[in-house]
Image 1 (cartoon, chains in turn green, red):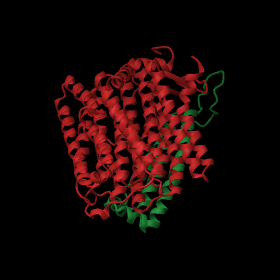
Image 2: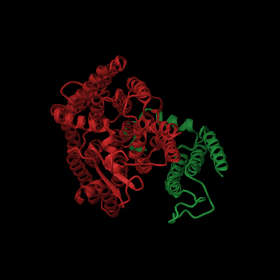
Image 3: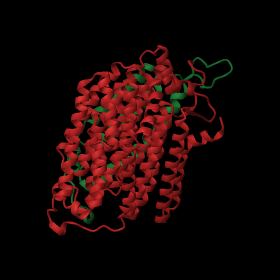
Image 4: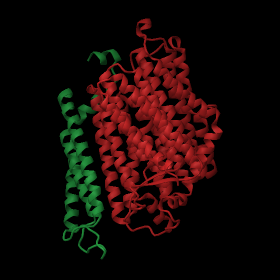
Length: 125
Length: 501
């Protein structure tokens, strides 16, 4: 079970990093999402995987095949937060497309690095 | 323990959250929203000062949320450093909200600003008072969500481009942090910082915990904008709305520095490899940051690069790891937050008076607004470390600690950085204040309704001078805070109950 999760996490992380290195912002954002999911799997696996018994602690102690509930709780939190950030990133992406007409990272950094406009120009735009 | 300290511990979280909700409810009424926001920020400052008084007695305040004892529950811990950070957060929040009132050209933007600022403050305060690693991650995310929306506020093309850089690089840092937290849990079986520290102190370091911890330090370094990984900061801070970039400049990198200080002092209290690496990183950060600033010709970009170089000083204090050096780091942290936010405020006023942020297009401010010149001189000289002001004492203590430890190169770089800082401050002074405006009289414009901005910058300047003149008590507090940091056993026993568990 762990080995499957580990390979999945590694594969997702690899694809995520590959996408992150792309010139296109859409792929960068998708890369972050994949990387986030691979990390979620890693966190889940770092605890204790198990799928045979409910993760309740009885008076006899922790059942042998139970999963560790804490990483599940952690990952649940991380998924919720990650989802919010993904949505925000998409919103930024959409607005970037509207304002710049392009989602190439070079183009975007070029604009950010341009000298600051005079304040009046900024207000009139 | 009587119930009031527990309430006081949760107050830095509940107060901004309450203000956020109040602002949300009064969204239609701009004045009410701004008033509530100011009230909430002032309240946070009061809570912070109350925490400083409590923590100043030397106890470490601990509260277990929901009554679940550490290490299983969620722990809130306030020692002197945390208390000081919450207090200074309140001060900066109040100043920023006040300043934004005068800067409010667009009411809609101002309204969202108040909302988001308090959301950000929840995250910042949470990061300062949390006692376990995963909650630290959650608070980082809370402040990140707030900061994402704040930096994009009222976005034109340029601002949005800066937002993209900021969002992508901060997301990567946060993902690294999450992975590190998960792996730490996997190998150590705990997320509670005190219990981790207890494991480290007892010498039975769990196998495989070092690698994720190093990853975590790297994630904090990105947040704190340390040497190889600072690129996102000067690429994004200069595009935000002025009150926003002042707030970010004051607070956000310092959350990363705080996390570094907390983790390193708890887990590696004695100087070792981690400190060695941090020392060289700090030296490189100081030098590269200030050299980067020298190449810039826009006020906020110069100031952004200075944040990087100043963070180097704080990490230098952490790397030297003697109680004196830690005291210097704490002092620097407090002083720098005030000074840096103030410089961004003044940069904003100067830019609106001259109509540009580019130094060649600015000028004539000394003749037009001598008060602004004085206001600029105080934090600028303090940043460079000129004697009676707060920055001098901060640098003095660090340099002395460096001499005691015998790291001559670091001391040399610290002093050199101070000189370069002074040079780039005098560049701003010459270009924006002394030089005549390139457009002559036509280039200057009158600003109305600036009273709140003057109160904000004046208040922060007064604090800077106050810390400089009354350096004794502040340094005593910083030394006491450093004493607590240098002896993590107190922290561990305060959080876990019985000592040595």
